[in-house]
Amino acid sequence: MKQWYEQLFENYSRKYDEESFVQGTEGECNFIEEEIGHNKSIKILDVGCGTGRHAIELSERGYSVKGIDLSQAQIDRAIEKSKEKGLSIDFSVADARSLEFEAEFDLIIMICEGGFSLMETDEMNYQILNNASKALRPKGKFIFTALNGLFPLFHSVKEFINTGAEKGQASEDTFDLMTFRDHSVYETEDDSGNKLSLKCNERYYVPSEIAWLVKSLGFTKVDIYGAKLGQFSRSDALTTEDYEMLVIAER
Image (cartoon, rainbow, N blue to C red; front, side, top):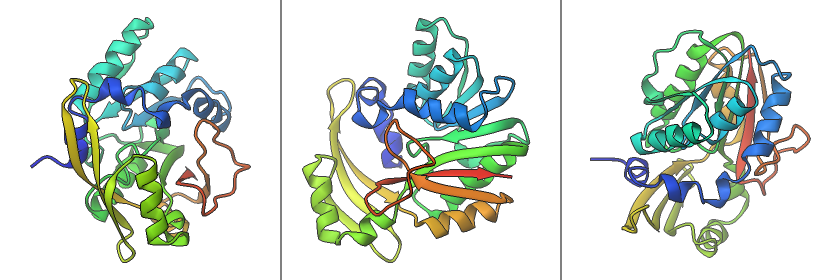
């Protein structure tokens, strides 16, 4: 049986490009460029690239980027968009839980829950981090976002549920304080107008958890900040009001 995220992205590429949470690409890429010192000689891997928004933007700026995603439809859309811009980007379908890259990239990005946090078990989420670690070269950098567990922990569960309902994101939320998993029903329409009702299961993480996981994979420096849409910055300390956290891990 297909998982909710597989069902959602079977035919959701054009709708995805219209979502509010994917409109911060330019600012996010500005931050990424600063983090790598505008070094255009490096190789970048975009994990869970979706329709290729970061990969395309970075490629337009002169960087070498490979994009991977679990969804064939998302990859097809990414290829279509890159060709429209006259770009030749290496996009391919791949499962982040079973990558075979070994020390091939200088930077790995995984933005907007690019696979991580969506998996149905903690072991799967860890495998994604582990594979990203293996794919990095010795002095590589790993930049990713994750759902911030401080948000639902600080707010009452009732308030957290109501916030989601008001935003029209989901209904029937159940946040489990023992597992930090949010179970919800997401209702939307795909690109063909078919109605979808998906039982979602997402994992929130607290900063200390993320730091421990990443350091266990050989990273010596882990910095965590608030992830503000289109405005990633090392100046934004993570707070209980941040829905996502921005993680920057270095060897």
